[in-house]
Length: 338
Image 1 (cartoon, rainbow, N blue to C red):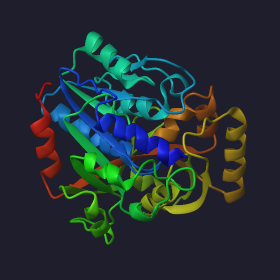
Image 2: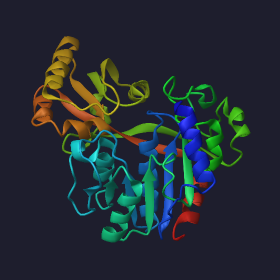
Image 3: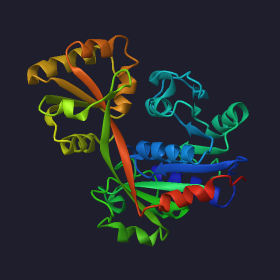
Image 4: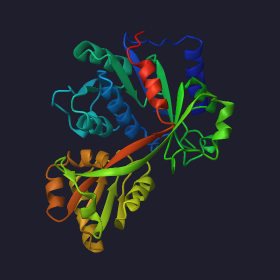
């Protein structure tokens, strides 16, 4: 039933029975075909950073999954005012902290969020986060993110599996980006199977923890965590990838507390985290930037944790291959108005 509904909706767009509105500025859409854990947010961060390096003026548009608010919200005005994770959504708030000069707007209706971005902030390029299925906004570059560690062609559709739509939808992508590639230059053993639906260019990306930051956002030395017992804390789509990234640093992982993706922390969770740290005799609590964003929304949580543990968040760096290919697609999009 779910698959039939998705198919009918896509056919309606393909036949122009449902209309897409393309804003009068360049539009880059980044999305995936599976629910959670593809590494999309670090890629959106990489794209935003690159656009800024090219003197573009981006605005980020997202649905703001997991937020308690409704309608259009300006998560960040690009001038220091940032909503909390509960109202703005953890990933948009995370990106707002990473790029304080970039406006971030969320809304269930991306068209309305885009209208607010254009009217208030006058960007020259919109970056649509998690927008592969949201076809109401036209785009000049449509990036499909695929997790290289999970064979997409064998993933069942929702609700039986995590795939959001038919594999034939890959034809809409103008560029495919494989994430979680083990080493670069990359190959993916099962990628030949997707060529039935996608015959375009492919970018391969890997990631690693490049730095740590404290609860106040200041840099923390990775070396300070080596030789100490480290408790991991995550509420993300693919916690095993986070644990693998930490172990690659040579850090002693004493344990890993895992919550569901977008989990909203409460005061009772802080007590449980400290109890587990005591049980494992942990000295360091390492979490993700997304989780740190949500912990900030719990009054006094980080102060309570920091009184017992050294609390740090892992900052990811994304590497791409072939060199320059993703950049070339973005360069072609910059300044390309509707």
